[in-house]
Image (cartoon, rainbow, N blue to C red):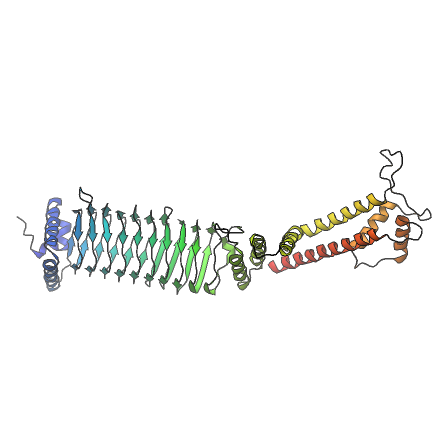
Length: 487
């Protein structure tokens, strides 16, 4: 016969040496004692702690593989020694009622909830104090909601490989004083870490699974020695008003929806490595000690947001961030995106929009060396064809050989008229080159007659050609300058 009131039953050595039947009897006795109420329980655990100290022996209260049906109230309970709910099951009753309430409970030593299951039941750890190691690894939550609001974790906390299915989870105001590990956790609904504080050795969110769920960190404070977000996809994330007092790293994170960074404060180094943004992130009103390098961030080309608002301000901020870290290539890239997004703004005048379109067509916003050269050649060829068409003589009985024939209008000049047109175009395109006045006069007499006077249309076309060629030359030089700066 087992004496369930004997303190010796709760030693760790006794548990490991007991048979399965004896362990079940110990667990059943602990469950029965807990159901007597908070006063009886708290009085008993005080005596258990005193006995353990007197005998210098390690004790633990075991609820392994226990089953709790319906509403279970642990509010205000004191667990002054280690407690284990390994593989415990908390389930709703046949009427669908179920709730586990650990509000204001104190765990003075380690708390083991590994592989516990909360099925169709609320899980409430509001204002709960965990003074030792709190282990919720591989725990499953499937109920109306899960909350650790204002909970305090003085020791390390592990939520590794936990599964939160069908219910939103809430860590609002939680205080993580030790390591906080959420690696491989699965969230099927939104999770909220608003105003939580992470100030231990590590705050790790690696390989987390968010099933079309939002992650909210509004007002959270990260001062852990290592803060790392790695290898997961998230539908949307909010870091507004968040404070990062130490280095923080985002590695291989895919932001599938909107990202709210408004008023976030990065006081040390921020890094984004191989991170993909499906929407343009807006870093306006964000404080950086040093902006992140944009070369390792994959930011899309999207001139406007889903609500139709142009991304001009977001791209302008990205341009400034690139400039601050000396990344001229991305500075130029986001300058181009900023300009192009203005085409979608009602506040941009038509003249301004026309200038943007021309700037893009001729030089890809100063990024291309090929476009200015091609444009100059096109202008050269186009004006030559126009001039040739106007000067060509059309016979009364045209044939294929004479319909577009151009002849020198001054017989004494031995100049090929096609060569004369090409040389006049070249002179108009490259005004800065020295020219021979005798040669110019010879070309003019050949094309326009004995006196060599240029008609009005020719002067206008030459002036326009000169302006366009000068613009192309300037844009080519701008492209060369930008290439050298990018080196």
